[in-house]
Image (cartoon, rainbow, N blue to C red; front, side, top):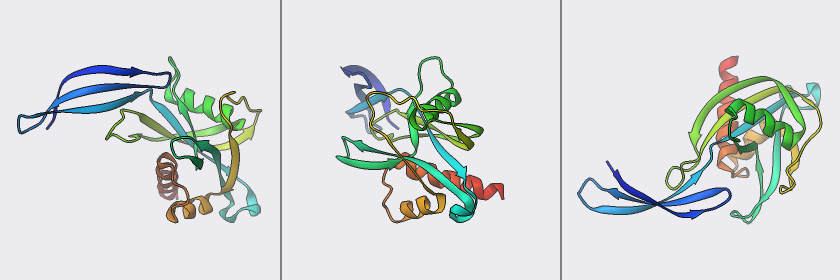
Length: 184
């Protein structure tokens, strides 16, 4: 097992910090790891009931936005960082309202996971939100978001076909599907 020997901040940005971390390996040698430090975040699978208009009556609210690292638009569940002093649930409610203009009456925390532990310490807490109503959006001036609402079953099919490629969205939709299946 690796043991952390020391750590040095090599970059301090607005959204991330990068540390060079020296570790001792089990064979006695040492190695350096680069670790991206990031504030914990939340992600939300927002489901709405639409009666006969949608197969099985449930649709999911997704955000379409251009992502510079991917160099293309991705379809994602609602997500954002937890502000100082906020609980994950408070953050999820704020992010849902800011990005979609919706509030939800029913919330379930599905779990917390690491986004990509090979290089970052970022953790995301996943929520399922239901019974939403539009109250007016409050978008961030630095984001260009487009809301896409599609049948939940279609979103799951898009995951299976590899058309939804954002990992938090893939995990969130599959985790929500498993949660809903256990409710039945």
